Amino acid sequence: MEYRRNNHSVYYTRYHVVVSTRYRRKIFNPGMGEYLRIKVIEIAKYYPEIEILEVNTDEDHMHVLMSIPPQMQVSYAVNVLKTNTGKAMRAKFPFLNKTYWGSGGIWSIGYFVSTVGINEETIRRYIEFQGTQDSGQAKLEL
Image (cartoon, rainbow, N blue to C red; front, side):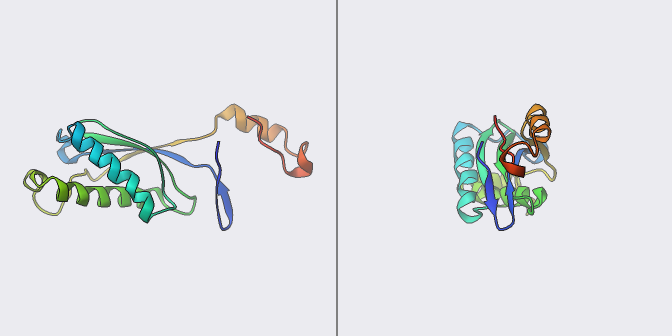
C-alpha cells in the first residue's frame, strides 16, 4: 500500500468512478475505448494531484479507479475527467459532433462514485494497537 503526501496530510484515498455516455448511447468500440483510456491517463500530466490507477470502458460507460487528495472535492476531479476527455473525444472522432450536437458533451450529467479503502479489520487492528508500537506512532502492519 502506498501512501501519498502533500503539505499537511498523508492519505490513501481510492475512488471508483463510473461515468455514462449521454443518453447511454453505445459509442465506444475497442479503438475508441483505448484512445479514451490514454486521454484519461494523460490527465495526470496536467493535474498531478489526481492519480489514475485503472481505466476501462464498455460500450456506453467508463470505469476509473483514482486517488485524489483529501482537500479536493470528488465532484471537481470528476468534472476535470469528463471535461477533458469529452473535448478530446469530440476532436478525435468528428462523428460525435453529429451524435451529440450542441455544447452538452458526450457524458451524462451524473456519475457514480464509491470509496475503496483499507479493509475494516486492518483499521480495527490499527486502533487496537495504538500506543503500543513506536511510542505513540504505531506502524500499520499488513
